[in-house]
Image (cartoon, rainbow, N blue to C red; front, top):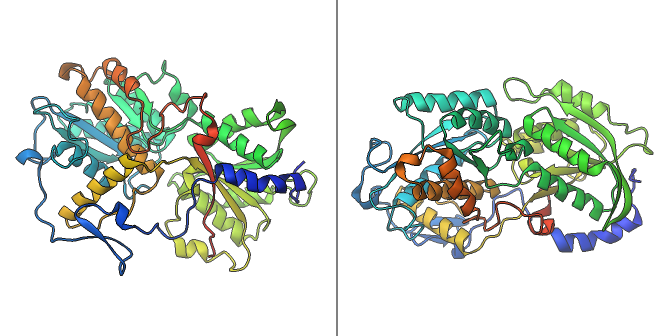
Length: 460
């Protein structure tokens, strides 16, 4: 039973576990670019530690001389998409969305040049869905109003599950197909409720199985849970507890999973964390009862909330030997105010962190996309990105590609017929950029899909 000390058996498993699942390693500083990933219009500069443009950028090039997406009316065989996501948390989102669609429109840049039919171009708009269902549905209707009450052909988004559920409900009324790069709520897999919804990310059910497998790799059988009261967090917590609690007989042996403590943290209406609720949650942890307590705490929250919880815990000097377990929603992200966040962590002692994230395979498709993106950024006079900014960014590109391919394969008059479009989405379940199977089939070992990694040393 897990109390304040790690058993010798668990310690013995550490080298083996990390040999199996240590796939990603993140640092506080962004990754340094190398010449291998600098695009044809860029080169690696040692002084700037990154890719820079090697020529003065010319005027933005339009595809085959066609006008830009916002200048062209919805005519002929064109396809209109709506990007609906949290533009504040994903500060890279709109730029990546715009560039990806522009690159698809460009038939001569060497990336996905054959995806569009002759005479067909993409048009698009981006709206902020925040992390809220009401905001998402209002943003969808606002876009509809802005376009003479004509719905888009397809919707890419949202980030948060609550926003995707709401937008799927309203877009579904128009027969609009939606592909999300990040929403993981298990209920979104219910095709009777969300028949026109697809995603390029595994549901909470698969993440829960990865968490259980990781915990058992350490021989843990008792953990605590802190979650926010969002749709994502409550859903993942429920899915995990259903798999974890009770008696088990599996590859790790005969064991009984126990929850030492669980508490839900309130998120305010303005999307900030209720600090009083955080303090109440942390004060409720039975730290004075080591027999029934657990140093392992699974923190289920989005990044904009998780870092506030961790900051408050540090300020309270809460259980300094806690092992915080992070899910992909925060464990491979950075605090928006890193200096303020790190100020509360002592230089010589801080908690341990372990994150569980989907595996990102950076193969030739990924590098080809990055190279073309860097070239396009240079043409516009923008600083090229040294890498695709995180797993969700790659999934956004995959969502766009899956949706565009399905819409192109569907006759133009049927593109707002979700059933017709979804028949093609179902046949295109392959990541182009992340190179992973969208369905995350159970026959594939979970170790291939999720990896554990150390969270950045916050005081380093």
